Length: 371
Image (tube, rainbow, N blue to C red):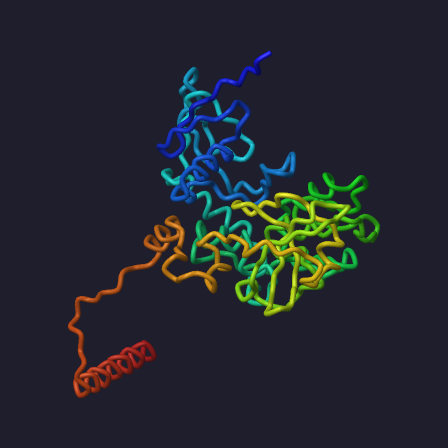
């Protein structure tokens, strides 16, 4: 009997029409547009908690909020509030506004500010720098200023297993690591403890996470809250060379990315798709114990998208472009330099203008003291 294909649903996302299957979310529809046309990647809403391979993920960070200007063909009324695109399913004739709506852009700035309320600004010493989703989110959608003055909450670093260190101070409670443990283990030993501002990721009764696939919580963490103890402080990710490799493993697929510093393998991670999501989870044996090139069959350099900081040392500089959204944001927050003044090259004129400017500055300083 011939299989009957489901009737496709047509929606409009930021003025672009796309047909998707019933049950597709707005986020997945936006990604379908970007996968068909790389130049539209900037239209995809950001995701801090949503992770396609993890069932039930999404709907917590509110980073992907969009406006539904038309609910459907049958009911064209707009939805009264912004909705999370990662868990909202599409309907026939739906019209969605993302980067074209000012309310959405302003809300994203607020979400960035909210996530950074307790998140420490320790990027210079964080191992996640260069591949941190919160860095990307703040750069593309955040504000250059902060209004927060109170002290951030802090936690002590703890080891939750032989290979994993938890830095709860950096955690944004996206629940990805919890869903990962639910999916790949029969008996999860960690979760979210406490409620409200006292919530934190922790292990149950000081137990350690030591199952064969525990290292995958490192890959799914969007910030530097869960880090690889064997890789901590060894190298910046943009100075390393990623290579695709595989091996015969009886526990997992054995498909990984080897991160080289010279001839040394300093880190092994699972392979990720263009959205930063793990394709197939790998075991701890492949991740932590096979750190020699002879353990692997090399396939070639890892394909890194041109906008990533990791690609900066490996491709021509003119190919590493900033996202259009970030350029628009910078244009709204920084004033243009007045370059209408004549360009002076004469040394004597430069000296005279310097003396004149210093006199004016000293005069302003005296006035402010007298007042």
